[in-house]
Image (cartoon, rainbow, N blue to C red; front, side):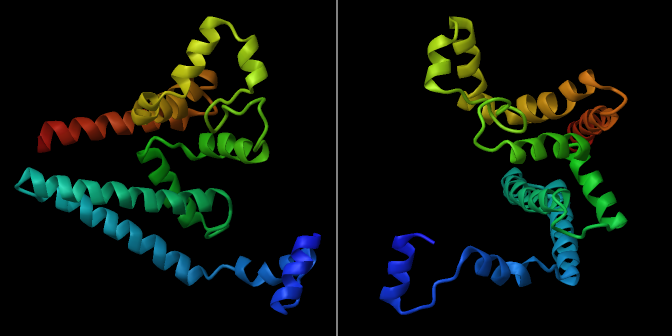
Length: 211
């Protein structure tokens, strides 16, 4: 406990908790309400399906655009649930939840096996420079920058360029999460190829059938 923290507690008149006390106090929040988890998961998926149906059925492009924008935001919401499930914080050991999130991950070019491997590495090596690009964007120190060649600096700028992030559908997901892992280890990352195939067929269906 720092002096500043102790002084703050004295001024407010409140009891100051130790680090152990804080850990104990947060334990009730680590207990999952599975009923609520399922309700959030199912409702989010139903909303996502409804928005997709609305975008498909809309006769006017402005209405279709509105549906699509909200659908995109809802995909982010479901992705947050996907993220928590992969960390074991949501519906742990549920085979049905595993199947649902596996299908969702493949459909958005985020194969669960590749995500777990890279994202867990990212969490385990937070604030470390070496390997910072795994599951995130490459970062170097000013000392490393000074020693880099012109080509290395150019590559680094490209990797962190806003355009690359803007076109993340191709650069981060299609290439980084699917094509590259499959090329590294086809037998282990077969679902990466499946994700690309599913995405290609889905796009062909959308453009070919719905325009």
